[in-house]
Image (tube, rainbow, N blue to C red; front, side):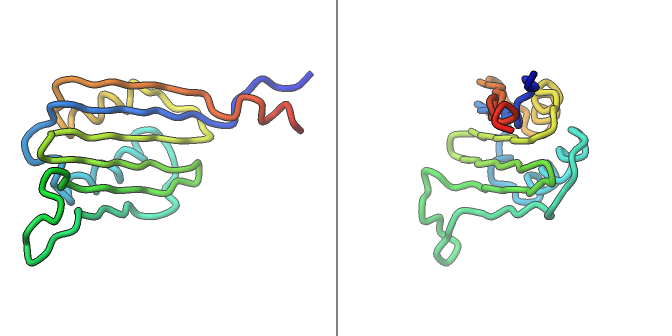
Length: 133
């Protein structure tokens, strides 16, 4: 009988009303990604990569969407984050072939970003993956 284990898991967390400045803080988002990997007991394949939206001589090219985006590769898959400072909004996607606790990610993000409201979804991915072997 084939195993009924999914290939992986995705957790999507959209954070609203984040603390002032956190969605535009390169260092904070870098440290968040770096430490979240340890918090959910995964293995970094790369250091986090975090970039700020484009500017022209210090002027935001997209003033309604400025903020930072980042990614960290995991042996188990990856984590990405997109943040928009004018809206105090941050979107986080955690994908892993190893099981992790969504509540751990939620509580960890709350400490870093101080959001007021959120939406989240936890999905099993590749539910037929092991049936094809």
